[in-house]
Amino acid sequence: MAKTKTVYFCQNCGYESAKWLGKCPACNTWNSFVEEVTKKASAADKNDWRSSGTGKASSTPKKIEDITHEKEQRINTRSGELNRVLGSGLVPGSVILIAGEPGIGKSTLMLQIGLSVKHKVLYVSGEESEQQIKMRAERMTDIKNPGECYILAETSTQNIFQQIEALKPDILVVDSVQTLHSDNIESAAGSVSQVKQCTAELIKYAKETATPVFLVGHITKEGAIAGPKVLEHMVDTVLQFEGDRHLTYRILRTTKNRFGSTSELGIYEMMGSGLREVSNPSEILISQKDSELSGVTIGATIEGNRPLLIEIQSLVSTAAYGTPQRSSTGFDARRLNMLLAVLEKRCGFRLGLQDVFLNMAGGIKVEDPAIDLAVCSAVISSLEEISISEKACFAAEVGLGGELRAVNRLDNRIAEAQKLGFEEVYVSKFGMKGIDPKKYQITIKPFARITDVFSDLFG
Image 1 (tube, rainbow, N blue to C red):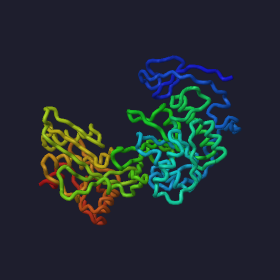
Image 2 (cartoon, rainbow, N blue to C red):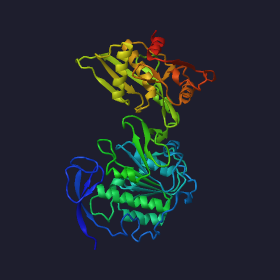
Image 3 (cartoon, helix red, strand yellow):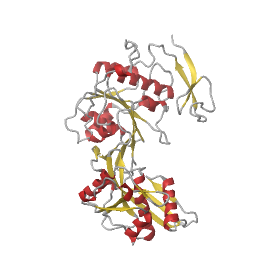
Image 4 (cartoon, one colour):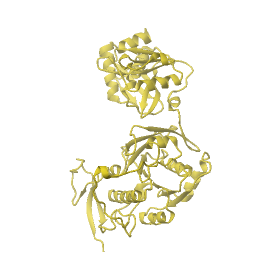
């Protein structure tokens, strides 16, 4: 008979202790230990997805040159954006964790993939009934000729694996991992030990059967994935589904990927019939307007392998309460303060008593320093109330000395601007090496200092 014991787990990193500790020795977090009652499972049952054991022989060490492998055959998910984020498809035996805020569209995306992919899919839901999932599937009118998608409303991993052995699906979707519970652990569903145990069983199943598994995860109010931090280390890929529930666009980012790049992103539009892929995101990130406005510029950025043109909006006004405000949405506030200091010190603009508000249109978050010049130009445009041509875009980093620094993959940025009909692009002259202006139909304006750009823009 299995013994029960009481242990303490760190909610942040999953560190296990026999007694309560005020500070976690692993991650140095205070007051993060919670008490849980666990059942000590036998060695044969631990992390096993079948009660009878796998019967797999223990592995032996091999020299790295003696190991042979074949190129993995990736599964087409029938979603170009998801394929791009995963690295050109779904790898057999991989475990993908997708997390996001409530109502952002995680379940809709997973059900949409399950209905459109041409493989046998088992969709396990611990949050919704079969009737609720059926109602959502009927709203997805864009899905033509749905494949084999089976629905199972269950939370016990032992019952789930019984159905898996009977059905033998090609893809498994679990929504969500925080609702699962294993009989090997006596704590409540969603606890640190239950999440670790259930995830370990699913990972063991995925690796031994070469079946890809999608895990939908909750997030905390701070925006981190709920459960122990070790959950993100256990899986192969971690996807973040971002966006404002009150806006229509959703961004799928990769924060970890063992089979591809971590800098890719996919963009979807939430509609009544499901999620629509946005093949040309530059068009949705640039708002349509019938007149030129001050404080608005277009910056060329790179996300993964995809060039994007985004609209930067700035508003500069006199501080009404003495202390000026510095507020930015979608852009690093500390970098904004640095750029404002450069404008004041190197260019002579008086911004110390001005409120400065900055916004990346479309709800996207940008960390690429190549939009520095676009940000500075938008701020000065709003300060001087002089509009900038809507046919001009910017791609350069601004240094602390007021110099324009070169950015990577400038040719891709210029080509994207030309494709969308822009007539001129402001860049750093130090990044023009290997760039032939004659092969582009767009006018390329290289400058060395930010003051030279302002002289050309505002006279």
